Length: 634
Image (cartoon, rainbow, N blue to C red):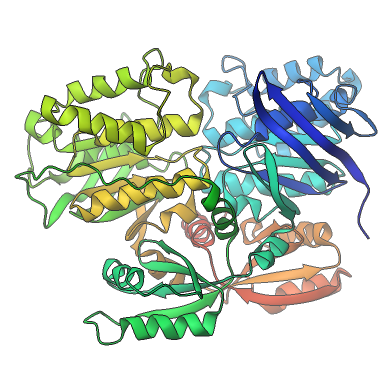
């Protein structure tokens, strides 16, 4: 039986002058669910949330929240905006107290609520710490505390985990699962499609309209396609062979990842036969083909790619007299200390020309410090470094010309226009005048900045800023590229486009080292390294890392998801259990928690098991397992 709608939206429209941002939206949000709104930049998600939150008037249509208008329901609505809303010079406790006073929380109830939510967010030991001293994940948890302190019945979250590391993202979503169990209804906008998998229902939004709406399972089913994972030790050659196949009705899309291809097909057996036939007789390494369930990202991209331009204009290359084979980056037991604090400990890694290497870790793991040592911005406290074959004087001017660096923090100048920023970076890297026009044209047209050349960079959406920053970092055609979280806040379509160019630079011989908090994105890397507390604890291809993860991941359907979730997390290591929509994902293994113990606990607790199945580990599952085991599981 479906619960009653808490939010009802009918024919909602919003225009800014002649620009229609939201067009005739119709949807309902039901009591106790997590409702996901996903779409590219400019889809209208934030405008919709501003109207639901009662801070913006609609142009037309009806919006009912908790039986009244959105504006009248504001005191019962919590809203975590996309723009950071904390006071960085106030402590955790002071931020919560300020939010409580604004929302007229009764004094008698304030302290009990404060302690409850700080414990829920694992912030109870840090009440006196300034908000400005918190990690990205802790800041978002604090912002959520501030939104919850008034105990809203509806909670609106606009891209709440952008820039947050995978461990904190998983914790954040576990908190959302807990508060929905207490009767809070949640609506969340997110650019991360793996997060959307954890929603009860999802609406795909584009250009102000909703294209599809349903549970994640319904959306995958409605796609009408299967996903074949084609693995090969020579992905590029396999891709070229498949792209040269004659037009086939069974193959709908091919997407390249670091050590595999994802092939969307209408008929899996027929497509598998066609792929094997296309590869037969070619001098290619053997391939493995596995039939897997489509992802929400497959649904999103397939639904919208025909209505969105995904340009892949080749970068205007010039042959350079630089080494393009062998090791571009080499580190042997490098360490970095800041006073008594050891940020990086004995890290060894190599990146070859033409390779994409992903460096992953939670906030504070030492990734950015490692990158700054690898590119010569920091001197290592100990260990050996080589960059483009040079072991000394890593700040040499000629060496710097071979390096492109996109910082974690946006490094362009907000008070310059788009074109002024590009020209500034072109001047810094001494791009010859005969190349300048073509390179600038490539940047503007490729990333769809036509008409925005004279726009101040500060006025661009976050995703557009990231694309502009990437363009600026590669304008000079570097042979070694460092990308520190290049797609933070970028929507799935733009992310796919950016990775097309990252791979293009790698194919042209560039060595690329990238960090990301988006683990599905890390699948684009040929090799990965996982960092925990300054140490490199695992390296390998994405497939190897997932295959090496001990145990199994089981998906359980039960009659009371919240009760089962709470019981499992109380009885076993909390990281092993998460809620994904209406189902539970539980990590089991012979050395910790076995499947029999999980099922016995549910039965003993009076929770009925409706179904169970084993599902593949995602890279995020493997990452969290590796990090938690390396840090003792707590």
